[in-house]
Image (cartoon, rainbow, N blue to C red; front, top):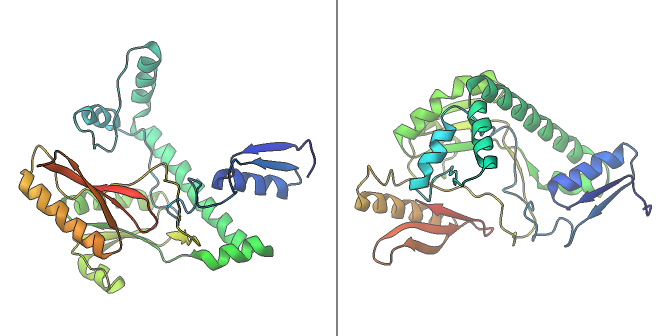
Length: 279
């Protein structure tokens, strides 16, 4: 390696390494700076849930998102929370974000995200098909079984189905599955569901050893219902039923979170150590 590379990449995570690979393929001299072992299990993007494909494509700035963020002030477990603070920068950001929360911009953003995800999947396939140790190692860990998003309530399943035609029109190959169709596809699923969405472009990479660093983002499992609309004993019974199913599937309970005599939710971890809340 030259002592004066054309490009210096800071960070040996998935984005940094992929940028370095593509730049070097185009004839550039590239150096990667990483404080730990490159690609090791301590890095945030190691295995980073392992998922590749068009699932999860969605614009943050979309109609209703600002109101959802402000309502999150009353719920510390809300998916989106905007913490207010005084200052011109915050007011300017809120105004710009509000202007961006419209159908036209959200649709344009979704189109870009879908294209980016589809191109990423194509490039990963090409990398797995390539010669050399990198391609061979990835190919052994790469699988494309599709991706399932499973729903435990009719309300959530119905809301998800309403978005399917629009997603399909934008290139996301979603298919609605009834509970019976899901059972046929996944006969070993040990929990009751109302239905699922299946994305045939769902792929993932298996990692060789457990990850020790935490993901920057974790997904919570919401099964209890609204705190203001569902009695606490009903919420807690639903939460504990979900905890039992997840424990049987390999997850572990870390703690019951909340007041000592009235816990609010359960903190769990998947087999790789990634933490999530059941609430």
